[in-house]
Amino acid sequence: MLFFHPMDFLIIIAFGLSLWAQFRVKGTFNQFSKVRIHSGMTGYEAARRMLDSNGLYDVPVEPVRGALTDHYDPLKRVVRLSEPVYYESSISAVSVACHEVGHAIQHQQSYPMLVLRHRMFPIVNFASGLAPFMLIAGFLFQVSGLIGLGIIFFSAAVAFQLVTLPVEFNASNRARDLMIAEGFITNDEERGVAKVLNAAALTYVAAALISLLELVKYIMIFTNNRD
Image (cartoon, rainbow, N blue to C red; front, side, top):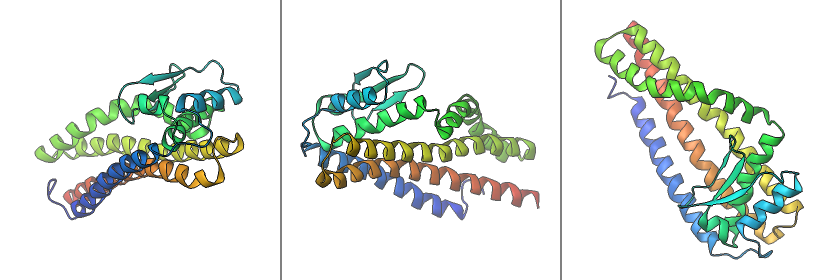
């Protein structure tokens, strides 16, 4: 029952959604990476200006290799942009760059969900590594206590992904609002920015949905085995 369960059909659908979301984010990024932004700013210049306008002069912006490897490092307090984003002057580049700066601003302002996410990370990092082994061993050897503990550990990972959703959406909203306020984009460019940011957010939604469905599956199997 661990490997074949009615919930698997929903999980497969969610997995398909995840693949489609990844395809969409790459396609949308590539589409708007060919559209030069009216302000002429590169991703680096947009990120630097947005950081400075929010008093984050000490937060550096660094290029990193790869595509869509952009992220904000809260430990070293640095915004890292993939080379296509760092150097290019396009709607995609500026949108992604400003989204990552949104995370830096969240950090500066102690955005509650980001603070919660940071506090959860060490626990989740430990729990998510053990959960699969506990669940597999528990179901194979029919040890209910091990299954229950595995479900608790896996629940922590699911909770982490759910907390990530408002963090990502908030960063995108901050980016879009600040880009408009600072004059980085024109009214005609807002739609393209929204498409880039929404496509990226969808990948987080799909990942969280898969994990949530898997958790429900494990709980259902565990409950049925106890009956």
